Image (cartoon, rainbow, N blue to C red):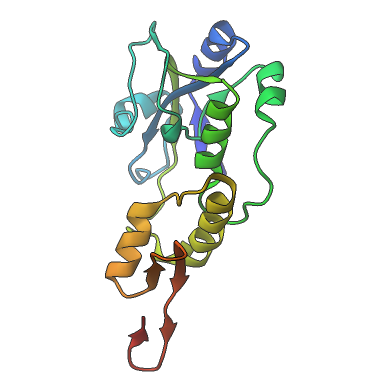
Length: 190
């Protein structure tokens, strides 16, 4: 089973575009649920547009100077030299959340530019999602704290605020800590 399918032009486009000092990101489309009989790979481009939260350059365009906060490991490429310069992914992250934000921030700190590459599409297999992702609450708190220790700020603050609105977490503005609320049998205590 695959979770992200690289369209046929993705690898050749990345190979043609790759340069030392550049972090390449192609477009990613979230697929709808598979039809009866599954997806037909040649029909994937017509099933979903690229994610609206990321730039979508034309097939022959490259947009340089991208926002590193939008880095997404679902589809990216770097040269071996650039990988060594970034240092890979921080291995302190476990479970869900924060690792891509950290990688993008590390790339920026090490002078690696983010390029949005047109003509390098990938398709993400459908799966149910929840907003906010309450099933990943503990991972987000743990990984968010790792990120805060490394960079001085919290990632995923939109989700943390949603968790707080739901009474699942609380924020201590003095220490800048987010913590899970203690639950009793009747009400969470924050």
